[in-house]
Image (cartoon, rainbow, N blue to C red; front, side, top):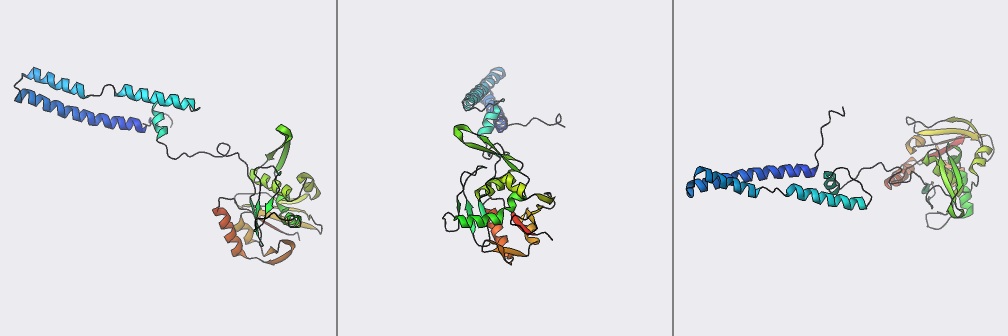
Length: 299
């Protein structure tokens, strides 16, 4: 199949071919006119008239054009090489200069393959989480009014979202960095690793110890067909076991009956599905990946 593929002509080669055809037609027309004028009007012999036509045709043909194009492309290639862009074929220089849109696999090239939780939506408010990457050094979380939340509010959010840490298969590896800093590396999917960082920002100082204190009893792994993950743990606040479900909002809302009221994990009110659908659409419109978290006592 690869051997059957035809060589693709660049835009420059196509334009040169079109220009060559126009020049050829123009040369033939002018040579014919010159021959007719020399033979019929000036009364020159046929041989002399033909020589005049050939001389005019040779003079019109731009024989220096290939050399000029090659030199121009070579100079452009040298400029690109100075900017660490190596090109194998000269015609590709013009093609690169004509590019208006570049389609690239951004993961690991244009981006760092890292995810960060930026916003938390509850039934009471929308919270903005500061920081970039997996490092929890920046623990600032702002409320709707733009001010940093209190420690009491942080404790409430931790109780609400600690399921993101338990219903999670990722890990965070900490290594010493330059200047005494700590470098955090994700072990597993970036999305899940970002939730562990969120847990630290909400007050779970040791994610591994927190998971060990609430061991996983059962689980349903994430699958693209289901678009959710489900785990069962010993309840973080005692009182039996609890099941956590995280995944696509449309799948989670479908199985929910109530929602947390006033950011109190023990207070419930009837589910407002329309509110959550609008919130998910708004966050998605900002280019954010939306995940929903649900929980219920294990029967």
